[in-house]
Structures are given as C-alpha cells and as structure tokens.
Length: 275
Length: 260
Image 1 (cartoon, rainbow over the protein chains, first blue to last red):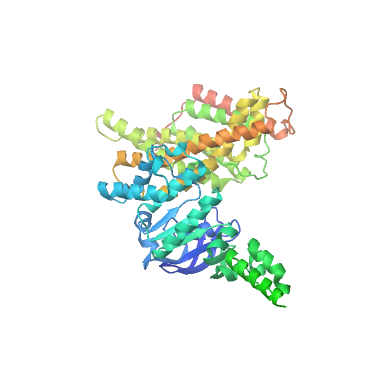
Image 2: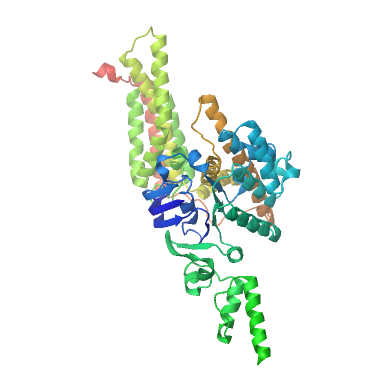
C-alpha cells in the first residue's frame, strides 16, 4: 500500500511541482495518473520509491516512511520503469542488463539465471539474450527496460509513459500483461497521456493539474466527464466522443469500451426494428 | 553540479552584460596573467577584491557565490596539499610564511575561478559565438563551441535522470571503497555518453535538413560594436596590466607575517 499524505515538493529552481497531494493506492490496484505536462505526475510517482522525498507531508510505502529508507531498499518492492530506456541501458548483452538489478539486490547466481530466463520469456526477448541492447529497436529497448525491472518481481510496478513509441500489438501485449499482474494482486501505477490506452484498460484514474489532484475515480466516470477533462487538457476517448454526440438519441453517455459500445448500438438497432 | 551553476548564463540587463564579450575576455585573461605573475598574498587579495564591484554591478552575486562554493572543495585541497608539502620538505614544522604561501596559492586559484565565473555569468552563449566569429574563428568551430556550452545544462539534467533510473534498479552510488565507487558510475556514464552521441547525430541531421552551411559567406543579424563602456574596460585592463608589471618589477611586496 502506498499512502501520500498532503505532500509538497519544490525543485532546486524553486518551482513547486506538488502543492499538497494526497493519494492512497491499495495493494492490487491499477491506477492511471493523467494530466497535462508539468502537472506533477512524474514528480508524484518519483516519491513512491523514494527518488524524491517530500519537502512537506509524508509518503508511506507499506507503512514505512520513505524518508527513513533508501531508494535501493524501497525499490526492492516498488519497481520503477523510466520513460526512456536509453537512460538505463548500459550492459554488453540483454541478459546482463536484466541481471544488473538482481545482482544489486543480492540474489544468488542460480536464482539470477532463473529470473533472467523468466523475464526474457515474459517480454518475448529470448532470441536477443546475447545481443547488445544498443542494437535493438526502440520498442525492443523499451521491453528490455521493462524486463530488467520485472525480473526481481516487485509487488508494485510504476510505469512512466509505457505506451510511447509502441505499436498497436505491443500496446495490446502491455495491456494483457498489466491484466495478468492484476490477477497476481500486484499494484500497477502508470503515468500516461495515452487516453485510448487508458480507456481500453479502464483503471482507476487520477487527474492532476498544477501540482494538485483534481479528480480521482473509476476510469469510466472520469473519462466521460468533458468538463473535468477539458480542465486537465485531455481529450475524451474517441468512443466517448461519439456517444456524447449520440446522447440526444437516447444513447448512454458513459461508454469508453468497444464491447459496451457495440452492445449499446445493437440494442438501439433492435429497438428500432421492434417499432 | 554547483560548479556548473556558477558558469550558467542568465539573461539580465546590466552594464557588465552589455559589454563586448571580446573585451571582457581580454580583461579575464589580463586578470589571469596578473594572478599568475604574483605569488604573494597581498596583491592576490587585492585582485580578488577588485572583482567584487563587477559582480555587484552585474547583479550576479548569488550565482557567483554559488560557483565559489562549488570551487571550495578544490580550493581546500590546494591549500592542504601546499601546507603538507612545505611541512614535509621543510623538516616537519609549520611556519607562518609557509601557511601564508599556501593561502596565496589557494587565493590565486579562487581569483581564476571568480573571474571566469563573472565572464560566463554575464556573457550569453550567442554573444560568445558572435565574438568568436568576429575574431575570425571559422564558423564551424564557433558553432561547435556555442553548442557545447548550450548543452551543458541539458547533459546535467540527463545525468540526473540516468542516476535516478539506475538507483531505481538498486544501484547505490555511495557504496563501497574508492575504486568500487568509481566503478559504480559506469552504469551512469555509459548511457550518458551513448545518448550524447545519439543526440549529436540527430542534431546534425536536423541541422542539415535546415540547410546548414548552404551559404559560404554568412551575415549576422546582430553585429558587435564597441561602446563607451568597452573603451573604459580596455583602459582599466591596460591600467591593471601596467600597474601589475611595474609593481612586480620595482615595488617590494611585504608579506603579512612581516607586517605583524
């Protein structure tokens, strides 16, 4: 469980990025943090593994205050995948890249081997085991970065913009993977601008604006509230836009899912035929 | 990164900012030379104090102090090494002139840092490039230089992100002995270098797609012209140099130890 209690944070250049944000994320939850650039999303999630310590307020990870623990110790439970894989890849082979964190955390050599194989398989990277990560494509490098964090099996996973530069197939795989994490009662927190991806996953959505949390609720409710989204400079998901326009004809307004949309349209068609 | 902070330009309008960068550079070099020709503490102290009006006039005192604080570690190191070597070579005892000499060497370093800091704090990278160009430095070199200066803060920020990313993978930079600590930086340096190379290639492509180097003879929107203030600085610089050389050759300089 992650609890942020009224945290404030200012960068060295005196910019106050967080102006009192409170948020509780329970175990096994899937949370998408959204908002325009500079809203404080990344600053907030960097508090969850202790990379940043609040200037005011408290952050508790599993009941432990982050100021009383090190990043390395917190990271054992809270894995953080950065937006740009090029900010962390440095090893000669993909295999060594994934083993890096495991060595830092002091896993035994045979366990490391096992975990590396598992993570490679999970991210469909087995064929690149001995390849240099610098020779891979952008999407593949992103998967290596993800695998290098998943390898130690953290109970919470933070993903900063995981869908950038990924094609549709990879996004779909990512979504399936997050769903799989959910069945294992793992917490997933993602910072993203990709409203369509969020609409497909329908997680809990937290909206941020100017260092504060302005809305927090079920994806389906938040992503179909035009006033709220406009305030955070986010556009409605395309399906929601269509249904918003169809509302005068008696269609429901809160639809963001393709299957739900299909059902609503078929129902309408049925009722026309009956007339 | 505090040393870099002291060298980072901030746009302010002041008499010092508006001076011609070439003249300012000559002034800095003159101070540099004067700092080198004296080894006694009193002239170096005067030299140090002489920069302060410039700093105040340019209103960069806060950044200037920060760069001095950034240099404090190296200054202490120089002082300690100087005191230690004289201590060991002079038969294991401290003498006032020895300590004074060490302080003078340290002060010499501080004067160099402070004058360069004033120069970089009050000269925009664009102005600097312009000055290089007008001093007949080929445009390619002038451009490479200004680009390098401009990318220092970007690289510093990137290094911070990389450190964060590796810390999140359990890297502990401050762990282990000296050798281990140096090795801890490998996972930070490799991504930093790789991304700097990648960025430079991208920059080259972006520049070429915007027709960089299409015309052989470039003209500039802004031209550097000498104003009254620049001539005043030339006079000050020449005055300092003449006075320094005269004092160095003909005036006996007392040490503080002999004055007390």
